[in-house]
Image 1 (spheres, rainbow, N blue to C red):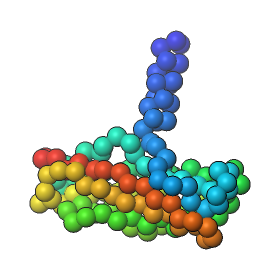
Image 2: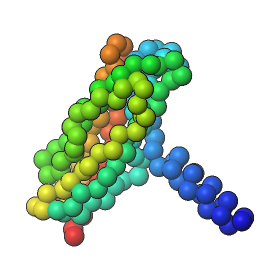
Image 3: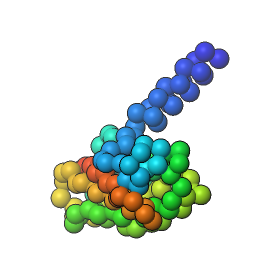
Image 4: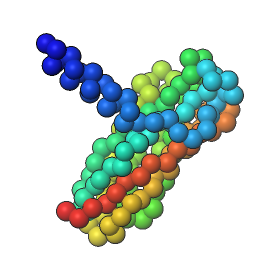
Length: 135
């Protein structure tokens, strides 16, 4: 039983530490009226010609009740799908992305830029990296 509890706590801590809210706060200026974008903090390795799933989340303040449009941009060699998605105020804050590296993508690190624009108020943005490795 102790081992099971320890494993669950370790998994929860890993999930908590695995994403970070970065960039400026969007929406309202007060902390409970805005949002931030949480992106993976650890580099994501992807083999040439393969696809990986990654989660990006909205870290909403208690009073932030707006829809947010997320736009994703990257450089040539990798693709992200979807490139644009609406996260409704009533939706869960997690968005699943599929990141694919072409078979001939250059090995190395690529940046993915995420911008979240609320219906009203200021946008927020965050970046995370993906490393393309040999198969």
